[in-house]
Image 1 (cartoon, rainbow, N blue to C red):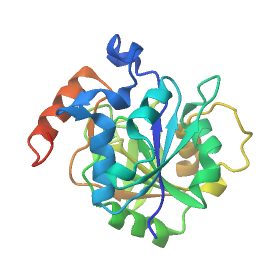
Image 2 (cartoon, rainbow, N blue to C red):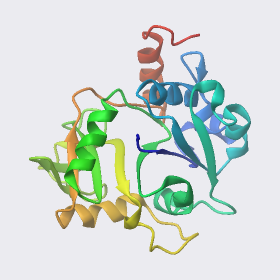
Image 3 (cartoon, rainbow, N blue to C red):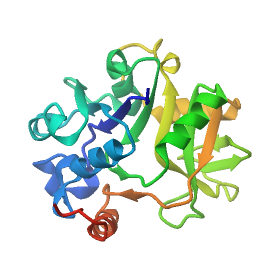
Image 4 (tube, helix red, strand yellow):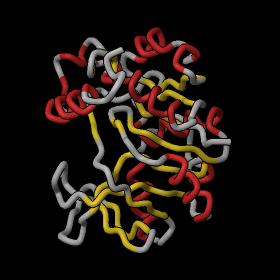
Length: 237
């Protein structure tokens, strides 16, 4: 059975304001459709049908649009931050009852054309508590933040970068629930702050992805993703 997928869709999307003051980033129109539709279609095409949407700001709009996911070939469950944003890690901690012992984590603004099944197989074979997908970025599409070699993430740090960081976090991570199950519920924390020390301890596997990532978290990324998806057959249906 395929891993469930948690989509982190609870952020404020400040880089896309004023548009995201009224609608969540997941519902921004990309190639003629709300972005979340493209994400869910991609997951279903790869055989991933159990999805947990971690929502926060304006999350009710996402729930009204997506519903239970049946019309999109997936089953959707929702985990809501509550009165305050919990960060990427806190949102996942809150969603654990829906996710089971292991799961994928996908950023809510990412469109990732990769081999999900191969990545899942690598995660299961590694026996590590976490696996990150990485892309040899060389600071092209964003600042590189990873040192990677021989199937392992050696360094992951978004705040302190070095010339040895030629890779970037691609945006798809596999986690075992035990990593965050002991964290207090309803406490905000960033998943990156957990994965950084874990990588330094040699406990994060890695898979290199050959095709670049696409994102809608910035105006430039939104334009690139729109053009990419418009070029795909069936994108505008």
